[in-house]
Image 1 (cartoon, rainbow, N blue to C red):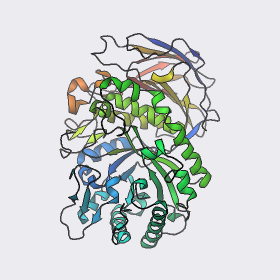
Image 2 (cartoon, helix red, strand yellow; image 1 turned 180 degrees about the horizontal axis):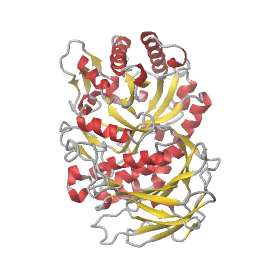
Image 3 (spheres, one colour; image 1 turned 180 degrees about the vertical axis):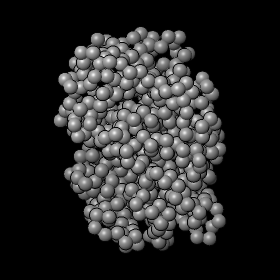
Image 4 (spheres, rainbow, N blue to C red; image 1 turned 90 degrees about the horizontal axis):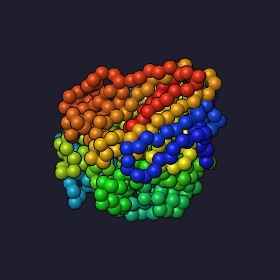
Length: 528
């Protein structure tokens, strides 16, 4: 659907699965002007997501500082998603003093499947993160015998909207993962339209203001196994989910290693997570959903509203370390190049794939407060999108065996001039694997009028894919972007430079520069 641009004309050595310290060499030819296949990237493409019942846990200085730091790199306000499984079961208790109370569930108060009661003070959280916009979820309630479900749903919507303020509401999601509901598709669609109508009336929306709703939020399991049946996006849209014409976003979820996939050991990290083919082979069905969304209404933006590296039985080392950061960098860039308009990285205190852990409430699985190693992908992704001008992107199709190396080119949307190239070396490396760290050596040939000089910045960890960040592993586990790192213990999420800004500026000679990318590292080359 979205053709890849063949930028790399020559490959002098191919990547193999063997874990060694050898170098690989590429010559990539980069067009100076954007090709017709380039895809527009929204300025607010990058997003964080917070599970509804645990929103209060993230109302901390650490969380606000991290959001502000990443949001400052964007030219439009970041959109934070507040939603998830728990968001369909919460009920507002106007007389409850506590912000949240876990009232039912096998894992209270850690699981997204537990049931929570919310006091009015819960909604004070929507007054935070003032530099960001938010989407929030209108509870749908999964049980067919839910009493007064619409009144309970509207209580949440009313409190959230009043606290957030009209100008900061990016969208209102109609439930979450409806294939888990006891009732069928027809009842789900009916409830969704009831929420739309009641919300519009309650908030006094008119005209295009009514186009505010997020449709679907289809789970990972549907995307993988039974799309185009009851709860595939195409089927839901054909089944009148957007009958009112007020859809703003259509959403699906994605976990690279889902809970149903059993993974026994860390040796699978290269095969399942740090692997470009493993990432891209999941996209045809996502692209099909993008096509269905556009065919239904080209004003609706397709988003991945709930994304994580690994859940369920996968080792913790898969979820939160620098290897997961490299996965996140590649996944986001693949997504934007295929037409996804936003990716929200979901979090709760117990989730090991969270970009940060806000407090110590997560139980045995996590340790907080802490900024985890995967977080470092955030500034890499947002800096690739850029904040000086709007951009459009193409993926570099790497000939040979592209499993462990990927590249992308970002162009100025107005002038079509090349601005940045991202190079991601996914080949796994950590000190116990090999004493010597192999490299990818890339020659970039920039097309006519492309650039005169280039600045190179690196997403780096001395410990390679095993690094988990300073908060969890100390100095030896530092992960940095252009020399900057983010921690709870040192800077409370504001970011700092242990050794100062780290970048290299080189002259483009005869349209050519050479860039070295060590194994388990990623770089952005910015042109002038």
